[in-house]
Amino acid sequence: MTTDEKLEKMQGQLTRVRLFNSCLIGCALLAVGAWIIVKNFGSETMHEKPGVKEIRAKGFVLEDETGRPRAALRMTKDGPNLGLYDDAARPRVGLAMVGEGLGLFLYDKTGKARAVLSVNKNRPGLSLYDETGMPRVSLTVFKDGPSLSLNDKTGKSIWKAP
Image 1 (cartoon, one colour):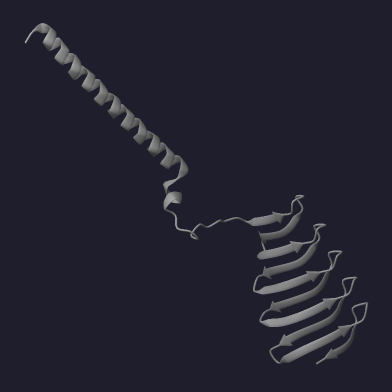
Image 2 (cartoon, one colour; image 1 turned 90 degrees about the vertical axis):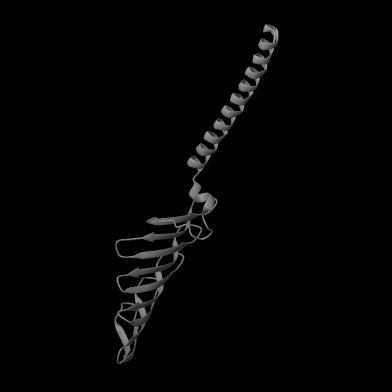
């Protein structure tokens, strides 16, 4: 074998080694790129089952297209409450839990409570209020039986059974 033939053979081997090294570097770069993508975008989300995700917060506010609050779900120091608001951001419906009690509140267009359906200490009740905020009718069911109270505009009882 002549020197030229040996040199040509070595150049061929060198070309193959360079090609192999280029492929090896390319594969390594692809592997590192895939690892970075999985690490940054979270492998948990790729394998997560639908419906198992949990969101935790102290409150949520839903706004209309103009940015006014239309609904709010909040955790207060007294318990959770849900409020629905009209287009002027006034409360219209409220649902709240306070300790062991809970209530459904219906408000008029000025934001005053007009009807309250509640359960306190296992006693259900319904109260209706006039436009000044005075209770006019109250119905409560006690352990011994129901109680109905009708009040005048000053809040004084005008009829009560039993």
